[in-house]
Image 1 (tube, rainbow, N blue to C red):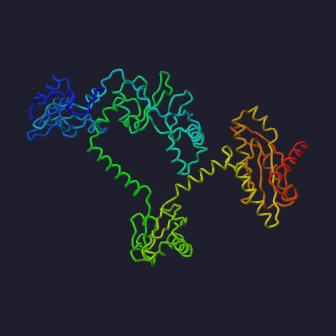
Image 2 (cartoon, helix red, strand yellow):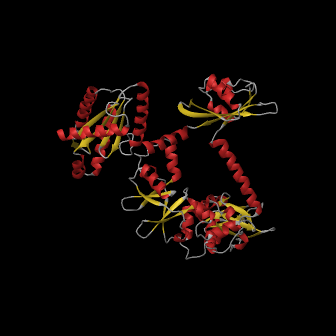
Image 3 (spheres, rainbow, N blue to C red):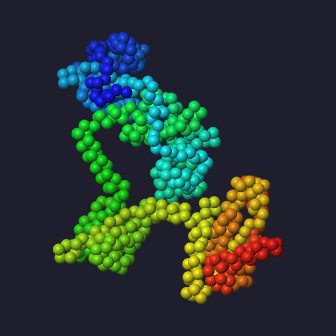
Length: 553
């Protein structure tokens, strides 16, 4: 790779001496002599058009008018001092654009995108394996759940996972940003397979030359390509970001760096500022409403109207109560927030709205605007927090719910039983704690396989969840054990009745992978506070009764 930065550093083709009114036969002869498929032709007014071999052939065969072989849509006139990479865009590469290079007086030659790429990457020993990204990646199976992918990336502190099939060949990629996006949208990450959401990518052999790399990867609407070894298995990745920023060992890095003049740097800053402004304005869509000290609206932005069913109520001078009424906020709650904001502390109100017939969670932040006299007014910012709520719900589910059965796990169960103990201490009430162990589950695992065992546990969990009341909690304790919190059962007789009901439901046959399977459960109970006044004591008592019942069967 040579340090090419401007067009005058390139080897240019000489301009053809073909008049604008030349016949298709003359154009074809010039194309053959120049060994070219397309050449530039200067028009009578000094512009340029292109003539291609394909168009000339069509004209000759159809005996049509001679100037129909000329086109103006894929030719650009550039100065010999122009930066090459400024014009080497994806669209120009796709179109095979011709570049007529001029000095201050006249054209000095022409070139095309293929020739430019060839000269930029003149090192024939430079293969894609030299461009491998320093960013590490993980390998996941296409049958893995998004939860597994999330856990893999989290544990390895990695941003990228390559999804492979049963042969170890890549099928796509999953990034940490994609996983975050899926969580924000409320995706069922436990039951969604990697193959269902993986991003498409380009598979490149590790011995491909750079010109092939450019003609494929840079022209695709993808950001990461997977380089494979001779067996078709992942050997690394090539990132568009690393390629353009020079983080990989890539010869274009030198050329890219040299093209930034002070002017272009300033333009880049302006572009970044514009981009940031668009992000703040259009992505976050924060509504802003300003009031005076008398709570009359004195300012609002366009985004504020998007949070109202009737944006027309937003008018200067209208009282702030029209906003609280329209946003499911009581006037009392709004008044308290305004009062507390006078202390200088920002106040937050969470509410919800129906936007486009969908429920959205909305957050209102209220701040006081001080003045020399004490109070100038208030600023209320409004923001849609639905994505944040989805993310929080999924994060909570990751921490508090069992991956296999989707039931509460031991951690969430312990929190709920501690709350129930506090409630019963205050009210002198009783509740029942219960534990169940599946009889013969190990034999099913050993004979039918762990896959069938997992499906059976999930089916049992589904039955138990459908059986208990909304006020009850059933959780997976671990392995083949389930635990129950029953606030409305406070006697031994009621507990025994519940045990009979659970044993009957659990003992009904299951159809797992078209196989009929049966299993029973042994249960034990403990009643608060008769059998213990702590979770640990209740667990010991219930566990002892369960094993007593198991031996008695």
